[in-house]
Length: 132
Ligand SMILES: [Zn+2]
Image 1 (spheres, rainbow, N blue to C red):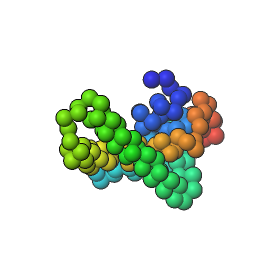
Image 2: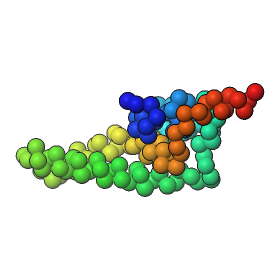
Image 3: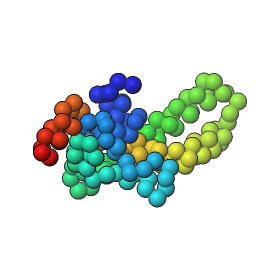
């Protein structure tokens, strides 16, 4: 995975700005802290909460991920597993959407953050210089 791309930040759950600091406080399946993010990046100091309620927009990304999951299950069942009925498809989707919901919640937040924050290769060194 190439550092400096948005995909890198999304898959590794790293800071959208420097791609080094952690974005989330813990793993998505640590239910006590699911989706909780740091206030600032620990490496470059980037403020993650751009404005109050910023991550409410992530629900649209979460909706898109849910639709993508449903369409991919529906398409794969109708193309490759034709013996699976509609109710079984709904059951598979329901099981997966419940099991994957912490991951989709976290993914939607970091995807949303990556829409509005750009990678800056000098973010870390600028932050260190500002501290001195
Ligand atoms: Zn950072």
